[in-house]
Image 1 (cartoon, helix red, strand yellow):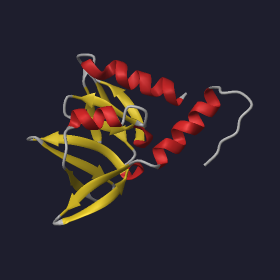
Image 2 (cartoon, rainbow, N blue to C red):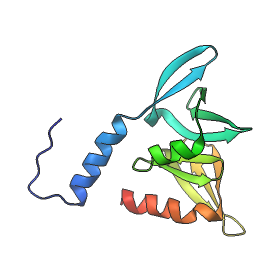
Image 3 (spheres, rainbow, N blue to C red):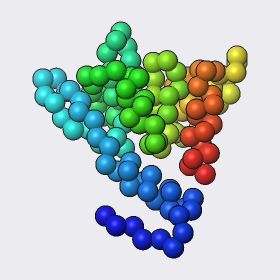
Length: 132
């Protein structure tokens, strides 16, 4: 795709980021099958007992890899690290609530609630600035 623009500004940057997001897929495992999972379908990724799981609307997929590599690969997308074990897709974020001890609770549009740890508050704030 060719994008022409008179001046590279914030609006063009948002368009380019949006196009890049459309092309992100994960190779997830469902039972014994390996399937391609569109990143926009994924609400969050979580590491549980050294296994990575992709949580989509109706399915949970197993992912072979590690969270640190995923975090690096997803740096310029709508995914943001919110804890040592979880990466959230902010495009599915419905609201954020303040909790005790400077933590936040992220409520996704499917009703799922995730805890944002203090260490990653800066990352989620930066993700919101990118979206604005």
